[in-house]
Image (tube, rainbow, N blue to C red; front, side):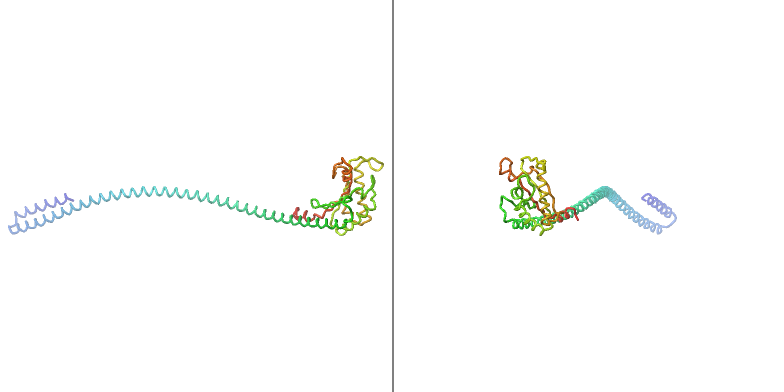
Length: 297
């Protein structure tokens, strides 16, 4: 642009020179004035050009600074974008982990609920069993009291009545029921069995087991091969008496023989042998409710 103005200046000077040769002084003076005005305008233009060039330089410097700032901002943006992507990946991984944890938590909650339901069912079953056992124990205790009342006229050396494991044991001594080596029940024994049968017939739900017991003295006769035979036959003799003379339902009765193998006392003394020669009538209230609960019916 500066070169362009120089050319203009030269052309103007040339024109003035030519004009001065052909025009008069007046016109010359006018031309000189015009030249001065043009020169002044040219100087002003040059000053403006210089100012513009300075401004342009400053703008270039500012542009360079802005470009550097822009580059820094772009670098920061790329770093932030990288961090953003990493954060998104971490967030996605955490979300995946949270989903897995939530799934596991739901599974465990379901498992806990199932266990709580199972525990509640078991607690209910235990409560039902405890109630059934309590009722059975109450029934056994009431039966014990009734049997004791029915047989209160007999001495302790003739019979004893105890409660063990929910069962009522009526233990009748050998001298109350049988003569030595015999299976026929004596009169006083029949009296005891008759009074017992009266109470049993009032309680048809009671199951009855008759167990014969002996001491360890061997026996060998035309009727008995050993103490097994004697203990079993004495038990069946009492079963027949209860069913035929006292109308006890035979479906409630189970005879068995224990021979000498469940002694109450040592067989080393006459007193111990006497205690071992006995018949035990074991009375058991029905366990239908317990069986029903245990079988889940």
